[in-house]
Length: 582
Image (cartoon, rainbow, N blue to C red; front, side, top):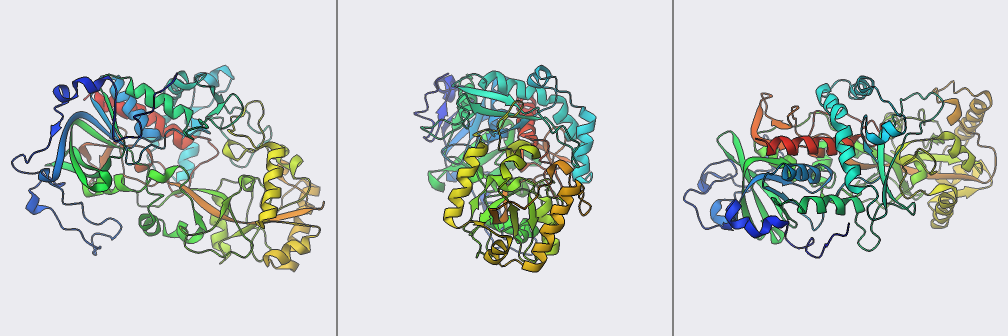
């Protein structure tokens, strides 16, 4: 399928809906309409003035903007309004429109984040059945509940497990085999028992040439183009880029629409949504004020914060829901990578102003020590477990990865899963695989940059990073002993993921945590309705994706590869259908 994207980076795109937009949805310029409705449903004079923060209203939240109908250059009538063209919003808009509802999808930037390429998690998909993969829904749901300490809604896990196959099968039908794109299931799990259960859930997109599923000319995900094109092909679909949510509009206790802006906030729109508003703006990983206030412990323990593709994730959706009376998760949760590489002389600082890089191999379970030269924890654990352990043991908030010349055979034996994998093989879905040769080239380039130290002796490594030499040498000797006996009597790492550090050249790098996404959001029920302080649903307001909560607590269970993207796609499908059917 070839998609004409010539209009997709302008203020709006329409499908065949465009021809009848004014008649069917009442699209018209907005003249003052009697009593202007403020974000809270009152008169313009009642709209609160902005604040720098009070005892009751934190500075990062502030007050809703005092927009009225009289400020609007245009009023749009639609049935379903979806805010955010990311993994959940784009899918929700598709399914709402496919159900025949007039659906307006707005996106703040000139493109959305689209769907995650490396993995979308599901249980019972067609590709899993073809590979002979069976996952017990109750077992995986209880594993997720274990990670959350039951500070989540188990019914939401069950909802994902019950419907994710349908959602991912739709995704595969739409994108697999189109424009050189292939959706691969990662079904090959380690043959040996692991301390933390690994799940064959990830469905990843890649091109036939083995590279990441992106169009080289535009840099955009191929799957994004297919799903955007499917949405625009619906006769009741409209898509507006460069259109930002400002706040929601309530009439009494019901959300009836939203105020949005274009032209960098110079022009306001009123959007009436008769069936409901679906908020899916991606969390707040790219909002420094919100992140530093709400993720204080993570910010203190991380050296670098990297939103990756979540440039759109600026927290506006969560703020708009809070202004409308919704509540959010109490406990902060970020999806944190362990791959932020720094120069040896760098110290932790402002997590939004750090000079750092990305080192894919850092997730491999090699020996990891702190500045005192002591081992930190079981290195074969979920991404952020080591970071949390380090925060309890060291004041430096950085650690050191240690490996030797035998690393190529080590990583093949380690058999990590998900996006940590470096080797493409049968039953994997790793996009843009680096492989042994590619990883070796990356290591040598980082050695040239001074971010990886390559040395003939372990003593040189300790000196280069200022690690306590005596303790470090003793730690390596002890670790080599664990390898010899195939028994990690200190932290219980699986024997097949132990390695010896005896063969020069030796390597080391200094690492930090990197925040990929925020996962604490607006509390929702199993109908995706935002909940208020009394745990009651707010009529007309639905929240999905990283804006939604009740799903994680303190950590991300990354050993179910694609779990979060799978939740986004599945709940996008269910929510879009549900709101359209109202």
